[in-house]
Image (cartoon, rainbow, N blue to C red; front, side):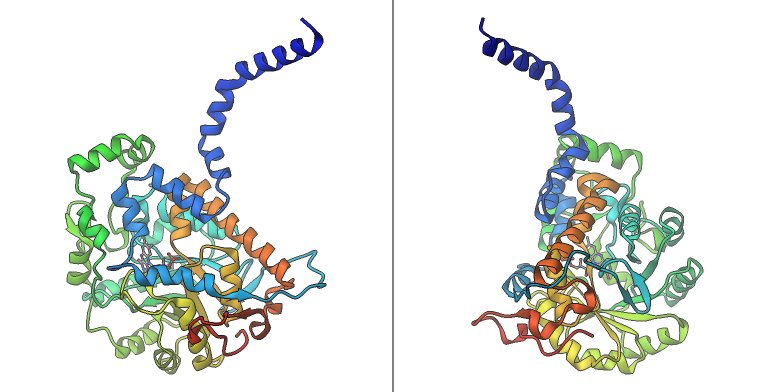
Length: 426
Ligand code: FNR
């Protein structure tokens, strides 16, 4: 055998010997996450490891899911006009939100029942967001209680409130958020009634999830998810124990919302809440500029332009298309944040350029925790942060203060007029 053949033989033998270890490494959770190049990959991984009904609960939206789709396609329709020959050796993503310093203009959006996708749910996302130097907004409908999150993720947290018919519970939640040191209260106002999420209806999704032959079959082919679910079940609304939606009440989310939430909620209640809570107050779910003006008059500190990720009124405008007019109407009297459809760092840059102080992200972080628990939530956040940093460098913006809307972002010919910028950043 000549020298070359001996070399090839030795290499092949080494490859065969190391095959089991390499296979194990390639199939490990960490390796699968590391292979995710973007949020679409994280979503695809979550879809593979989580039962369909749970994935659909997270991924789905109202009716035809038109608004959910537009949240993303309207971001994609916007162009960035880069400036060159700017020193971008250091890119500084830090800013402040309602006076609180954050290391990047990205907050964790409130998502309810996140423990269904992975038992670490809200705790994993809160830790990832705080470790990145930002703020996690804990949902009133979370599967972890306010006190559990305070223990698991003691960093900066805001509390998102829904208004139950039982005002005693609402007052109690506000008091518990205050006691846990939450830095702001976020009142979500776009759920006067449950929307129809057709995927959930088709799947018979409820709290707790219903066991059917199909769901049992799904669980068997997703053993990692099932083991976590059986060992650490997180399937109820932890903050409102005893108010329906507990582990023993089998109801659809629609039944829960329509029986428990107060559909008479109005600006009077905002005034009441303003009295109850002396810290920063935000309203989430604003799309119309006149509502934004009214929110400012009601004394709120911030508005979150949001259509609930397309999960409430289908055919509502995309968040990014509603942003410029809200920013103009608010006129710097409150901070304007945005959520809905952020899947790329460049989306955050576009929102900042159109006047948002920061963005919140919902599904990307939930896909992350579904794909790989704590490490998955971290991976999703790292992807978005790195993308934002690169987009800022390539656009010629070494700092958030350099993101100048007038020059940076534009809609191509033929894009809806609502996508045209109306002013600079707040
Ligand atoms: C949500 N959202 C939400 N909003 C809220 O104010 N309270 C809540 O309890 C929930 N729950 C919830 C659960 C799940 C699974 C999702 C996906 C979303 C809406 C959320 O805060 C945010 O507005 C959207 O998720 C933003 O859109 P993206 O980032 O998911 O596209």
